[in-house]
Length: 112
Ligand code: SF4
Ligand code: SF4
Image (tube, rainbow, N blue to C red):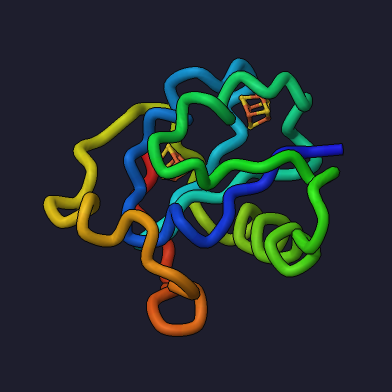
């Protein structure tokens, strides 16, 4: 089991999650974060910290695509352990449906 970051993180990217992870398994893309499924120890501490409610346990149904996205991009993007400022328009994107199709960026973030 692992936790996964899902659609609503895109363009919200508040980063409260990275501060609490005991094993530093978040990786930063240009406009979202992902969790490395082999490094996550399933502690669940990050889930309630996410203001966008974007972090889910992989035991929830229909998360196959997100499991794949998290596993793939955790290998390509830099590690992030320190919270940065959220995007100025993060609130406006919170709750917008289907952001992955229209707004996902495969580009890496800058990491720590
Ligand atoms: S706290 Fe939530 S929205 Fe913010 S970066 Fe972490 S997963 Fe994404
Ligand atoms: S469940 Fe725990 S180990 Fe996994 S990403 Fe969240 S805080 Fe890190």
